[in-house]
Image 1 (cartoon, rainbow, N blue to C red):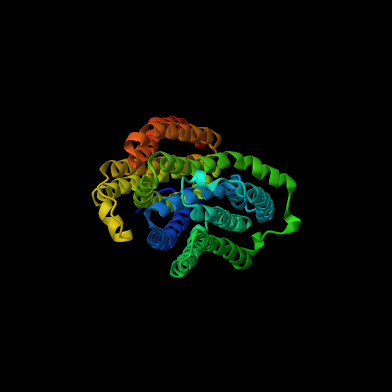
Image 2: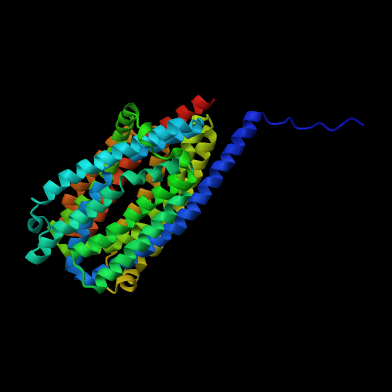
Length: 458
């Protein structure tokens, strides 16, 4: 008898591509699991800290505290987008099996960030001394206003201290070993919670609470960098001899668009909070902040998937494996958006109960605010998934302009809606800008980009 015909063996390139795809997904899953566990600890710590601080300060002063956090949080973009530019560059170097260039990129990025931290600290020291804190935060309490300046300086100082060390987080993500980052974030959250507890027990003021919150992220950045470059990847450890001014300039140039995206992401919530504070008062800021914290959970959980997929998409597209990238992008977007819709349907009727159980504070029925946040939450998750794919595809400049338009439209809508709607007006302003501007533009860009990538792969 003749032998039965056999299926032809797949080409070696196809086998290698399949193996790489499985390895990418394995690393993504590990990162998601680690991020979920670590972020769960961080969120729990944040909720505990908010409850402690709210009881210590009271609703009115907590509104001022929330506005202070939003303002100082703007300094989180002090890296000028270099961190994300570094992620793309290091991912490409590691994909080409070039650890020498990767180390030069890390060393150059770390050197630039150290210089930026020193420069920003010098500017902040002079500016903060002249800020009219009483007028800015609309507080008649002169004693409390006098403590806002030192508290702001402590919060910003903590961010700048950890800035050069935060490079390890981008490097770990670029090497698809980002599952170590949440562990250190969880440790930092524990440090912050412990600090807040001691500050509250001691009757601490704004400055003491600021020091407690700033300590955690600094520990996560500095301790994580020493561990990662000292034990896990000593071959990528920053060295002064590997600093390259040319690479440093290139990183700064590539980080420009990411910087705009970061600024817009930080500016919008801060501007909305300050606008709400001035037009509606501290009580509305408290409602907006507490309810908003509940609806931030879904985007934060979705980010567990999006963050490790960024370098995975980039690796696949660089190797001509666009089909894998497209298939994974569609599956993840549908899965995460569907789960977010279910979560929003649960939160809308139960948010008041959760807040009362969490903080002991009754917010009252806020249906318009809850629905606005639920709609915005779903839109944020869907558009963030698209943004992640566009970032990995190198389409960043257009997104920067889109983000500027989103901020402008959101603030324009808020100026109209906050007066009659209070906190609900701010929530609907954000959702409206996403629906009217970001969604249609992203849909058009994505359609063109996917078609081009399929043609290039073919």
